[in-house]
Length: 456
Image 1 (cartoon, helix red, strand yellow):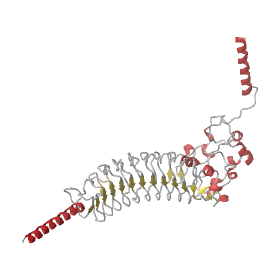
Image 2 (cartoon, one colour; image 1 turned 45 degrees about the horizontal axis):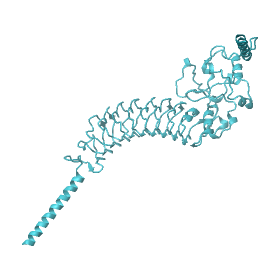
Image 3 (cartoon, one colour; image 1 turned 45 degrees about the vertical axis):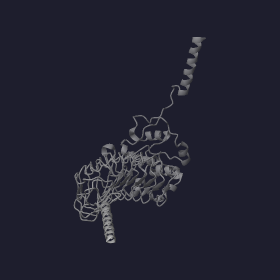
Image 4 (cartoon, one colour; image 1 turned 30 degrees about the horizontal axis):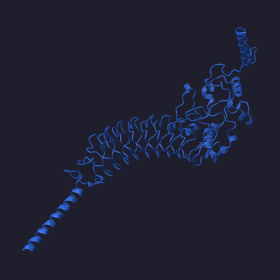
């Protein structure tokens, strides 16, 4: 009897121990927080607290997600809208990619104060975002919005996202970047903009990106880059601009990217006339791993590599551009040539006639009030490099003479093209007036005489 009771007691103890063990396991695996079960059709995992509700055909964010979740996976559903009351929980990682999201209300994520990673990629109906969509996400480090069909980005979209490091905007329909769009992203290191329709990079397009390391802009339609577009990108090491429509790239823009190590510019129709001089000079001094740059024009240089042109190829070019939007050259000549030009000016002093023929600032509307005239529709592609009549009339300068005077222009010449005041270019003719050295000598002699009279 005693043995039976002992066996029965040990059996009951074993049973109770087994039940306790299963209860502990169920609490560890099945619960997400005390008193709250996992949402229906979702699976919850502990350590880190993870709620997986992917591929369940949800039309809205499911309710019942534990408040202290650390990772919430809602990808591959049919969610269409995100409202300010959609998230009754906090999480560090939120995946919403591959849904049908078409609208995000301003402040929709403001309750997610500790969110570090947000993936909204592959939502092809998300064509537009309202300002304030990401308000409150000051701890966000990674934001994915690739393949969303985005056509524009509000200027205040990334306001106060000071912690953001990775921004994925590739393969959308963006054609324009607002000035200062990224100005608050002071800690951004990776910016992916490839596969869009961006046409121009303005002076303030990348303002504030002082820690950017990688900038991918390939497979766009970039035609012009402002000479100061990269002025804040002093830490940039990787720049991809291949497969665009660039014919020119200002040397000043590249000089601002002083830390650049890897550069890809292939797949662009490079113009290798005088407009290429700034970029060519930059390549002579840069320590950078670069792709080839095949010239598309002028015809004699077609298929040559712009990087390996010779110094004599630019011997007849004007001096480097002091700064224009497209990084082109200007008619800045030596004093002798400028004097000759002032004596043979055409009667009509329109500023536009001294700019390059063809397109001057690509993609901008022509303004007759500013002297911009549209190119003739009948002009051939090579007309851009044809000399204008007033250029052809300039005195011929031998290469040796040109380079001997290069950089030694009259320091008093500080105006360009037709911006000089009247008679600015008129040379000083010999006269009976004493020359400056003689005046200096007479002044010194007079001063010495006065001193002798006073103290003698």
